[in-house]
Image 1 (cartoon, one colour):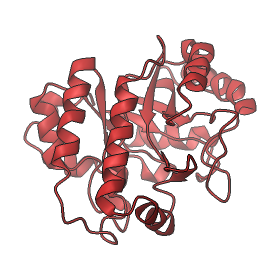
Image 2: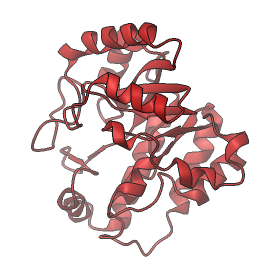
Image 3: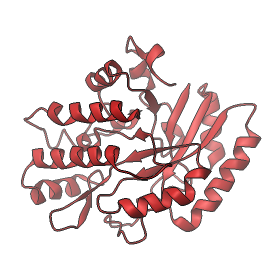
Length: 273
């Protein structure tokens, strides 16, 4: 079993548990491979919009993060494959800074994920869409409707797929239905198929893989995988490579969602796990 989306003690909003706790838990679950994908440092000119300013690790910590994982790769090489990765934010308007970061650090990574957490408002400020129900409510007010928020999210994701971020651009897109995190509080009365379909087509065209993320199942106002089964099936039909990710921010979250995925009839032959 492979888990391609795991956070670490370097996550400012995580549990703070040591790498070894994640690794030993993974081994106990039968993992054969795990990739740590800590939130990459945000671009220097970008101001983290969440109150705690804790969306991502600091750039000053990145060398020690990589050094720690290199040592752990060697220490546990007989027990489990450990990969060094990052979850890189695509932030509209900061493509140049992101490319520069990847040019400098991409060669140190085994793999990476490209995700969207921050949406740019019409006045060029940003809101973290998954921070809280209140922040999501503010998005609906700034964009005038729930559907406009969904459209903005998927348009930004599409931009992330098509953006030129250089040779080290991540080739996997993270939790593509993250915009549904608070869907029980903000039920939609429209079908987001019109936004997801062209996104999957763009992934197929670029040859990118898709993070099949278990975290949504434990979110009280979501209750489904990112993306849910319908869109996992659609991605599979497009021939898009599917990579399971627990998105664990705590060792006990490793493996979340995997039982639901194993119920899918095409799981074993189509998941990179």
